[in-house]
Image (cartoon, rainbow, N blue to C red; front, side):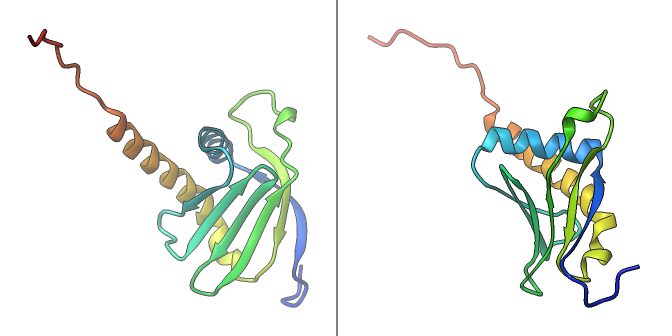
Length: 130
């Protein structure tokens, strides 16, 4: 067990499949750097770039945790979790980690619905104006 003063500390972890898949797709659509709010954890934001993910807590003003070295290639199906390295930077991470993945999935789903609503188009007949 880690003591409170051993941060940052890293461990091998797994990101649930749905969370990894949705965030990877959202990032590939956006390109560059993607910043996501976390549903149900409004003080937290996750920043996704090509090399990993970072979770910041805005109220505390601290980096809580980072994920890097994702290994999706070892999966035999998209339903399997993705191994990675989780680096814990602050003890508050323990409080949010269990709800974070579900909150990210919910946040991405909400964003997808908003984008789908904005992209909805109506077909209007073209008339020949003279």
